[in-house]
Image (tube, rainbow over all chains, first blue to last red; front, top):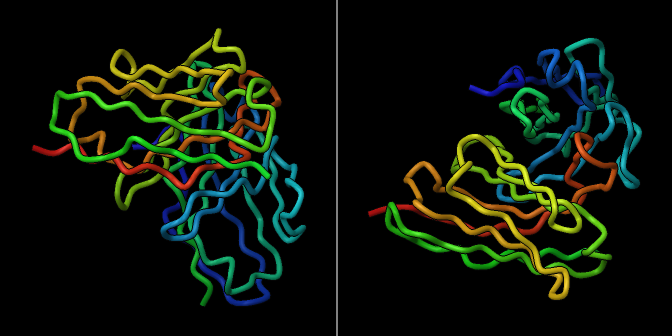
Amino acid sequence: QSVLTQTPSASGTPGQRVTISCSGSRSNIGSNTVNWYQQFPGTAPKLLIYSDNQRPSGVPDRFSGSKSGTSASLAISGLQSEDEADYYCAAWDDSLNGLVFGGGTKLTVL
Amino acid sequence: QVQLVESGGGVVQPGRSLRLSCAASGFAFSSYAMHWVRQAPGKGLEWVSVISYDGSNKYYGDSVKGRFTISRDNSKNTLYLQMNNLRTEDTAMFYCAKDLGLGYRDYSFQNWGQGALVTVSS
């Protein structure tokens, strides 16, 4: 069981806006920044969002991150078929003194 | 461009040891914290360990604490993970990752290697 909780699956149709949530606690999301990663099957993950809502260069502005209290969200607007992937949230946990991941959300583009 | 190349993976019996290496190039290796992250087959990501830019600070995930040791050689631009007393549940793809550089508690994995597969089986 992961320290950060994500819905196992999400779906949307092309052009739609979808949101993936990540729930934590005061010791992780409530105290530290959240990062999001995208992973395609058989490949290494890619940093999508860092510091709650910052995009690395090269990441389309269709991807955005937000945080409120002990929960964070990744929003994908103008959904495209190539967005079909697994998405993971992560944050430092002060109680564990380590980094924790969510269990991942598999996004399907219908 | 940043390149991270892991090596040292393989098949090992439970209780034995293995050392992974990660050769880094394309950036100032000695200026960045480095991580190991693993992924069991068909499972999610699990953070394993981080080492500060100069090797003075190291942190570990609970599942590997006391068994795994992270280290680095900045003169060789290489990151290591010494894994002792391996268990079947350690079977995973192990990735090394370069930190973005925002500091302690703001860790994020900016660049990833292609991974090294470790299989623990009798």
